[in-house]
Every structure is written in C-alpha cells, then in structure tokens.
Image 1 (cartoon, rainbow, N blue to C red):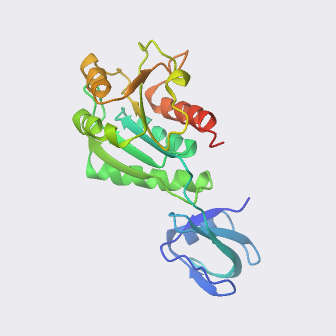
Image 2: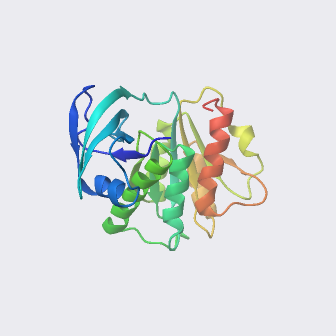
Length: 239
C-alpha cells in the first residue's frame, strides 16, 4: 500500500512533473527514506488523488511524475459524531478513532460534565490530528473538525439529520434497535467521561434524537465513537 500525503495544489495531469515540498515531503525523505523510483499517493484531502513516481530527491523536496489520477466520491451515507470534550489526550485519541471509523464531520461540544476545555489552539491541534489520522488510514477525505458547541447548539442541529442517536448507559433500547435503514445523514452524540446529565438527555430527546445503549461493557467516551461508527457502517451496508 502506498504512503499517502496531502498537498494543497494536487497535480492531476498524467505525465506531468510536480515539485513535492514542505513538511510532507520532508517527512517522506527523512523518516520514510523515500528513494528515486518509489511511488507515492498524493491527495487534496477533499477527494482528489494522484499516484506519482519519484524522479529526484533533494534534502527537503522531490520531483515526481504523475502516473494516474482520480476522484473519490463521497459515500452515500454521511456520518457525523458529536464528541464531548474529554480530559487530557483522550480528546486527541477520540479524533483519531472517529477518523479511522469513517466520520465525515466531528463536532466537539462542551457537556455539563466535560473536564476538558476548548480553545483555538486545541482546535488547530485536533484538525492536525484528523489530518494525520487520515493519512494513516489512507483516507482521501479529511473529516471536518469543528467546535466547541454547547448542548443547545447540538440540539438545534438534530432536525437536520435523518437519524440521531444519543449513547447512554441507562437507555432501554439497544443501539441496533434504533438504527433506521435508509438513513443518509446520521449523527451520534457522545457524552464525557462523567456521562450525560438527565437534562442533556431530555434536551436531545425532545429535539428528536433516539437514546440507545451501545452495549456491554460500557465504552470510554474516547472509544465509543469508533464502536458506534462500526455498527452504523455495518447496519447501513456501507461496509
């Protein structure tokens, strides 16, 4: 499998040469030991991709030739995750796992029991995390990370989805029982380590969300998104 790198000015003309530079190229040269003759995958991060062959290698950049190019369409189902802020590196871990699980959009929100705090610096770091996780999982589309929202703003978005599932350990229905076949735009709401308050659950339910139990044992907040996305990918026949 080819190593994937994101570039702002993706070359798309087969046979043309392209000067691949910047941090991505430096990483390929220093860490991956890329050599002349190697093939790499470049992507715009928005669906476009090109396979290139390395012609020359410098200290910080390389000249490559475009072998093939194409465009990866969006999947028929759009998956969003509303991830409550968690403490420490757990929020970074949640971004990595939600990206690997196939989330198209990750909405960060401040729950009543959230310990972590949002900041512009944190958002930038998490956007970078999503980008790096996309490279590791060979995604040609980087998920959009936005926030930090509050519970009211999350609730206001619920009518815009075909299906919204709130994960809650006290729910009476199982996750698989609330999945609606044919849903094209789905949101999963995940609370913080301390759990959702009764008021938050009521707010989301009133707006139209389904409250469900993901399973036993109870997942940590940072891991629940990946598990839910896996279930949705299977139930909605994305996989």
